[in-house]
Length: 70
Figure 1 (cartoon, rainbow, N blue to C red):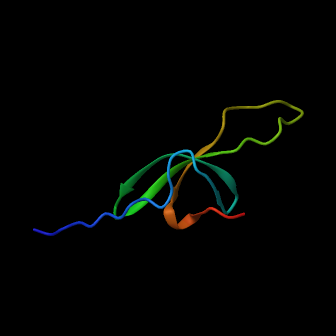
Figure 2 (tube, rainbow, N blue to C red):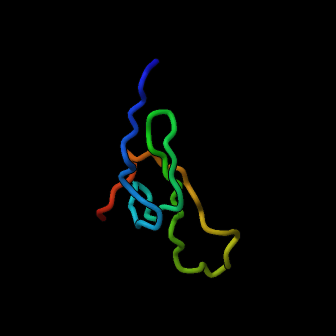
Figure 3 (spheres, helix red, strand yellow):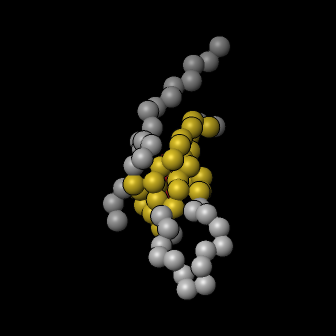
């Protein structure tokens, strides 16, 4: 039998975070394959002149891809 050590997540729901390509808010997270993964809802910019095609974008990022500073 082997023990699995799970560390606490570095980020939490509702926290504003940055990543290469933008910024967003942590919507959910899970521990998967030895790493924390976060669902990040990207911030919407101003509405373009032609209108919006869809809703906000949600992306899945590894804890290593996220930081809190700008």
